[in-house]
Length: 110
Image (cartoon, rainbow, N blue to C red; front, side):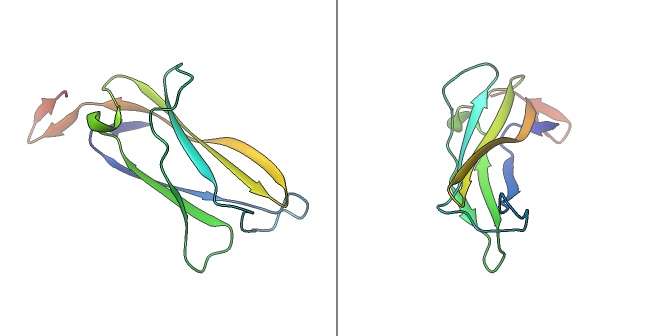
């Protein structure tokens, strides 16, 4: 998937009871990290929030900007970690490549 430099990205995640598979809230709020290419240190740790009134439904939002450490022509992985009933799981929520922003037919590389 391709994203644009400066784009605001909102991603959803759901959590489930590890035994029954039913939607269930986490023991504590999930965490998230964004990694660039093959680096081992997260460039960003967006806060995860619970969607009001929805069991096991969460979201995170961040801006893929140069100020937040993002670069054109790089790839990124958004990793989330959540604990339900004392069992912790980790998954890749999204992987994307970052492209230059385009405004009125002109390409901008920051």
